[in-house]
Image (tube, rainbow, N blue to C red; front, side, top):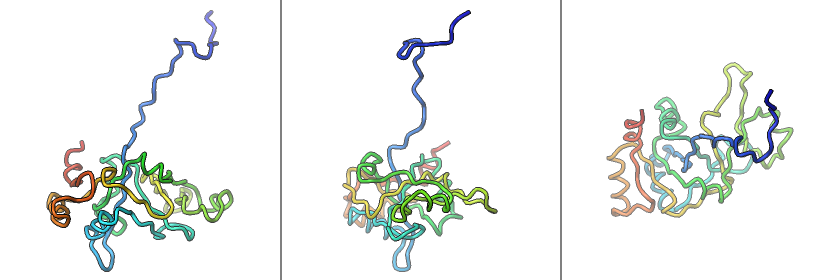
Length: 196
């Protein structure tokens, strides 16, 4: 009978590398405000080179920048027309490694009561409520959200503008005299069309 024991480092027992999809960019989407369209807000982000933190939908007093760690095919779900009051298809994709060095981290999905017991109040900005036992359940984990406290400054080569259509691409180029301060401008409706 063969022994099931093995030695650490045994070349016959090598584990295959995990094939977990990784996203190289984190995406942040804007929306219209009372004084500007979502496209206007994206132009402001590009001009300033900064995504401004917000307190909207954030617990505690600390504003944060919210981003998604999702592949293109999943952005289609997040940007569904029924969700337009939260996000419009105008945003910016930032290099994930850069965002990480600037303090961006995955949020913590927890029930609020649990979060209050284990986290200091000043860290509550890191938590997104997860209340699966409620009716209806509260579960935003499909967004794979990341946050960074405060604002997130970026260098143009580390970011790409995301817009809805080719017409919007033209608009961005016109507003910046043909030289938008980013690595590129991508019409995401076209990307959705090419995703199987």
